[in-house]
Image (cartoon, rainbow, N blue to C red):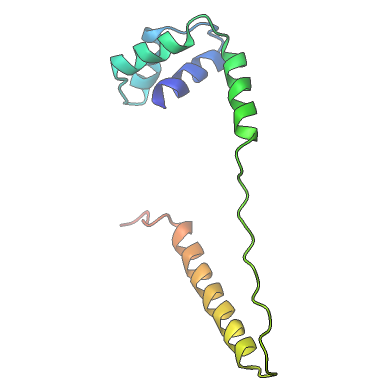
Length: 116
């Protein structure tokens, strides 16, 4: 993924046909290294192809991938007129809301503090 990202950065930067040295310079500027085998494999797959066409083909393939989550089916009311199932469902929703709030708070600092 690093190689692809570096290649695309070079293209966005104005280099219409970056080579392996360009990829290594970009990755080296951020302290990363590229595996020469992966760079060679990337260029062999890309040879003779226009990067814009490759990206467009990938986007069209991605469009067919389902990305929405399925809806949770709500349980139907059982027999009897008791309110216990409704109370249990309400209690469950309150617990889920608490858990989500706690998770959001944890996500805000991404598990670490600036002053740790």
